[in-house]
Amino acid sequence: MGICFGILDEDNKEDQKKNPNPIEQQDSQKEKEEEISYQLENFTFKNVLGTGAFGKVLLAEHIKTKQYFAIKIIDKKQLENYNFVESEHQILQQTQSPFIIKLYFTFENNNKLYLGTEFVNGGDLFVHLKKNVQFSEERTRFYAVELILALKYLHENRIIYRDLKPENILLDQFGHIKLTDFGLSKFKFSQITYTACGTPEYVAPEILLEQGYNECVDWYSLGILIYQMLCGSIPFYSQQQQEMINKRLSQPFEFPKYLSQKAVDLIKRLTENEVHNREFHQGFKGADEILRHPFFEDIDLEAMSKRQVEPPFRPQLEGKKDLRYLDPDLLQQEIKFEEELDN
Image 1 (cartoon, rainbow, N blue to C red):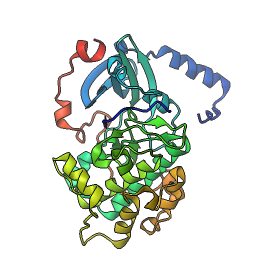
Image 2 (tube, one colour; image 1 turned 60 degrees about the horizontal axis):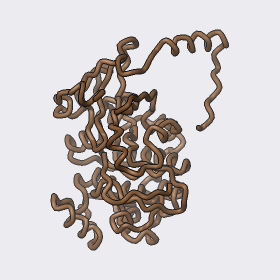
Image 3 (cartoon, rainbow, N blue to C red; image 1 turned 90 degrees about the horizontal axis):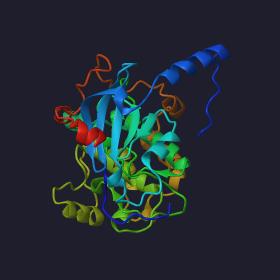
């Protein structure tokens, strides 16, 4: 999860498709759904999948259906420290995109809020980058297009994502991306917002400088991510965070010679420090401009939007219980049931 490193600002369905099944089948399905309960006691918790400022994400198996879910457990006391106008579950409830993680259920008690999402076990991009060091331009282009389509959907629905990074991009069993973790996302009700938050390595200058910003901060983060996928590292990466930020704000990026001119040009246009000098700064309209860039000229956009293009990499999985692409250090963490699940 990203972090909030400033004072949070105070500003701040699609219609369901008709079911083609006959009425009697709909009634039968409804009865089956009503028999299934989603409460804490209905799950067996298996492993830790992720940790963050507001809680943990655990792998859980529904006792009755045997279906796996990723359940995010949020400590309500932690949320009270922040002035969020909307919450992650409200955003996910209104989000329906093939490139965004699906929310199945929510429940709560006095201390915790539980978000049950689909379990995707193809690993996140951080794991795959760690294994491969860097991606080819073909593979980077594929992920970038699916991310652009996900962000375009969010922006069209007035949602700024604000935490784009490899750890928040999952691969499903087929190799398509699923954007996850909307803990720092928000609905945008005004032209600009001032919340200082995100993961510093990927955050746009206008956030770092505590200036107002709009959806285009997501495009800047995309530029940093594309650089990382192609080059194997973040521009000016340093364990001294302030040193890294200062260099990024003051020096031009260095590009390896093997990168194509199209890739270099795209990254430069996405990561201009001055927002008004960026090629793509028109909020959600920027998505169409980006996709017209020569780096994407050979893409069949209609097929991509329907997930009809074969991914350049497909995880080698043997079923839903195959955890080979997940972080072994997290999987080995002990789940303290009373403290972490219910308190």
